[in-house]
Image (cartoon, rainbow, N blue to C red):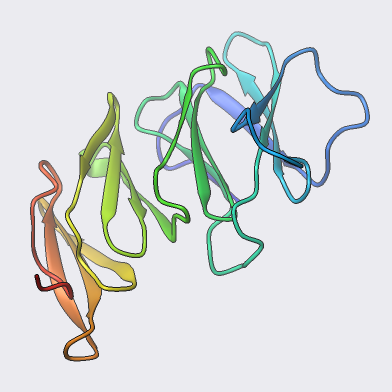
Length: 187
């Protein structure tokens, strides 16, 4: 799955397996991991300069519930590769420059192009990535499970599970600041 919501200056191909002949440039994310090839997401990336590199992204969880795929980012040079809920943000101009989203796993990836944000959901909160990198992160929205249900002007809408009532409660997040109200986590 490749999501090209944002304009980007790279092309990517998700490979079914590791190529027999490896390209001259290959990068493993994260660099320090045992048996990264087992279940890894293999992505051949072709930046706008005509070069190419293989991005081998370690698998988080082998469960279809968590996302796997490639997303364009608000910065057209960056690519987001997600392997079993482990999200890697890679600069296609300099693939040694990368970050891993702190949620392990990311449970959903939602492009919000009108606000130049790529929003990652975890079990308890949301994190947004903008053109300059990490834009904001919410506080805890749920005891277990966050879902995005929609957008309204400058506001992201969602649901978070509340343990005390055993039901999902609505929350709202300001897309500029990450400030939120509501949700299923009461201190």
